[in-house]
Length: 271
Image (cartoon, rainbow, N blue to C red; front, side, top):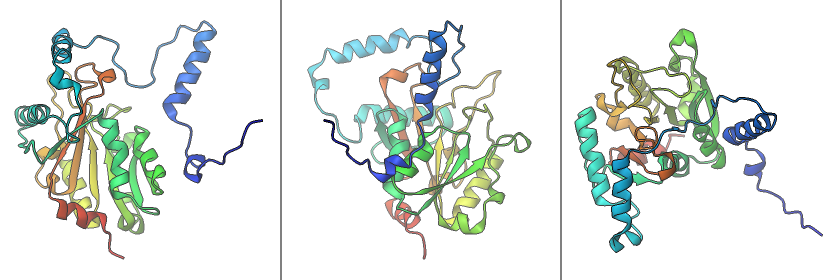
């Protein structure tokens, strides 16, 4: 006899995980012999660079690497992130206070709502999007307000369309440029509008920058943190997954201002 255990309400209210459903449909098509072009989860199909693999083998042979690391990540890695941001975006970060390592950027993205979203809080989410943005909200009892990415707006969210009562309840705003799945890009003018919105409504901007190295024909996408005022309102998530074909390695980072009083102010909305 099986025992029926009632699932938590939050689980019952979750929508099906998009990528699991896509995988199910792919398996079904492949079983019918369909010649499938995979347009599912963004997973590079070329190997990780050999120099990276060689460094892994070298590091794995050292017993010092066989122990638990600091919860914030190895200092050497955080310093490397800081150096890369300085060289790539001219953004200076304190590796001890403004960089944290992640088990893939998904860990940080999913836990952002844990840190800031209470039941009933609103999170602004561009749509279509990486599902973890809104699933993190749902897991923590928040309410998602979706911002459609439309061709006539160059696939940028129309912040002016957000009702004032919704904006006043919002804790987080999720954006992602270069964007998956539209491939749209954002410029400084857009980011300045985002910063103005965040300051006006006391919202934390969460920028998923996983695709900044996916530029072509001489175009180099920018970091949100390059823009004046961004550090006071935002956090940026990045990953080695797409840049270095390291999706299975689970290495990512979150960077931003460590001024905790500022973030405390933002997570306590006025009544």
